[in-house]
Amino acid sequence: MVAKASLKFVRIAPRKVREVVNLLRGKPVIEVLAILQSISRGSKEPIIKLVNSAIANAKVKGLTAQQLFISKFVVDGASTWKRYRAASFGRAMRIRKRTSHINLELDVIK
Image (spheres, rainbow, N blue to C red):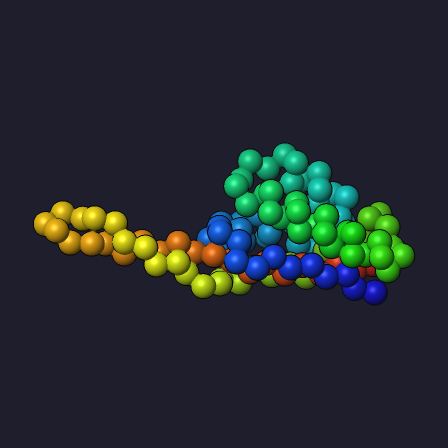
């Protein structure tokens, strides 16, 4: 049984989210929540929200958090917001605000 959850257009660069996700991949859900409480990264709050959503989706299927581990955790780049900032000599410099899509799958520990 697989429980899924996803976040779309999270306003954090994919590179920064992947730093946290790489720590969590393949671990039991209870351990993941403990790790996320001790991390001081800006991307931890959307990830906590995503993990809790996946746990709730698994409870609908009759599973508990103690039975689950993270089988798939993928961070993809989403659309980039283009903005401009004034530069010297009357020019404008492009600023790219990157966004992310985060997908999570939980599976039963065997």
